[in-house]
Length: 200
Ligand SMILES: [Zn+2]
Image (cartoon, rainbow, N blue to C red; front, side, top):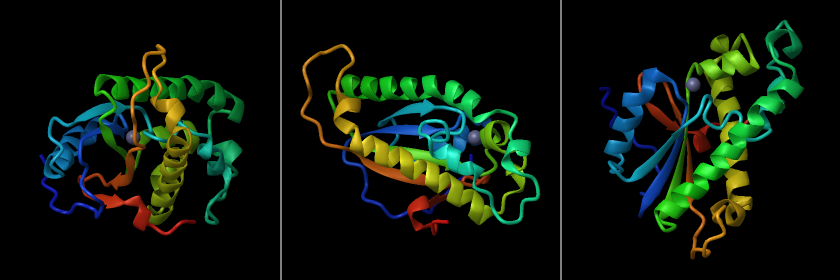
């Protein structure tokens, strides 16, 4: 297991967390390890989805804005049409919303933090958005992930009351919107705070 001693600066979570990560098997132990050294052992729900925040908002559509050094247009580098991706990602979004609600219900609203953990060389970005994603320069790659994670953070904040409300119509909990940490993990398990990465 990789030992990482660098924790990006953010206030330590006070209660429980919901962790959103990619399903990538290369980093499962690194994610657990990172959360352990962040003093979060056994204090989080873990929701894993290909690409993490990638398909959970419509920010992926910006992926069709190209970095200047690409020769082929997006339409030739993505095997799916925009309509196909919208159809594909829609239930992912619904499932995330339901799992967010479930986490709130199961903890009596004690989710104080959300970790959005994106990662380097994500296969989902290659499969769904850009066959050339593995060749993205690191800064550009981080900026794309930052864009997607920030959009999800904005949407969670703006729709928190709706997200937190029980789909079963049970009593509404006294809830405070969680702190949301947007992180990017490299393939050795080192983590950077995407808030410190300059936007495109
Ligand atoms: Zn991935």
